[in-house]
Length: 359
Image 1 (cartoon, rainbow, N blue to C red):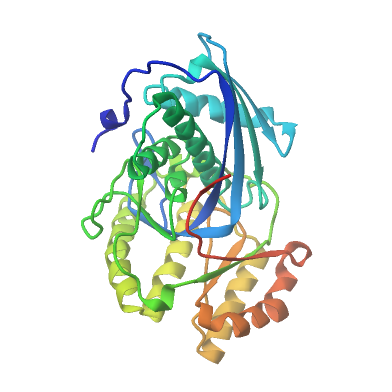
Image 2: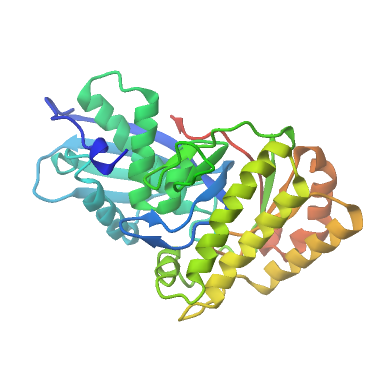
């Protein structure tokens, strides 16, 4: 597979106007991606749970209007959001080779999240995934052919990656892998693939309670953070360790080894934030309440033998992961001990999801 395989045949006719509407989920990485090269290519392989309740809905309205420039406007929850438009412009420039019709249309991109934007839940992932799926629906309509679902999904993931790296893991579920790795067949740096092996029942219907410690915008974006890995003194060892963890995770998912799962997931979260704290310039996205939650999780696990664990994305919010079999006891603990450290006691009780849905 190469980039050239995603360049389409010549279009015979173009649709005049219409719209497509997709809902795409966020995801939470178990083995983290942090650091990239080339055009949105990962420096290490990552694996993620696809979420269910955390998603972006995007409606792409299009009208035939040929131009030498890209023509579009972005609306967030009904209001024009010009701050998003430079990122969409960059995205369109990256994908024009693969979707040559982009300058033949004027677009209105209407988007809304089910969760707070820019707060450490992967809004870029779900947003770029949803937009890529809408664009693929338009290409399929233009080609007027029975595009195979696997081809459609692969190209959607490929395009999404060019908007936001982790977005390529939001085009399927419940487990997605991005980055070529010898332990995962058909894995690729160019796109995300659904995890190809059977998974132990311990990990079926896994839960993720997202504790909203801080709903404000991050002071350092993920894009900036990724770029700081280029000259990071510990970057190479971090990439090697992450790839080693992928190999371990394949065995863990097959065997149902919850203690080993916890060890990898929590160490990956802490390594991600350690890379932030040791870059130049250095920065900290965790908040004091994030640390208090982590310490209480550790104490609860020690006291009860529970299999709950935490992870974090690039933000202060804490994802509490736990098996479905422990839902009642874990959720009681969350309500009694952890919600006090959340902004306005807010949380999202989520679980593994199957992937995007066309609306």
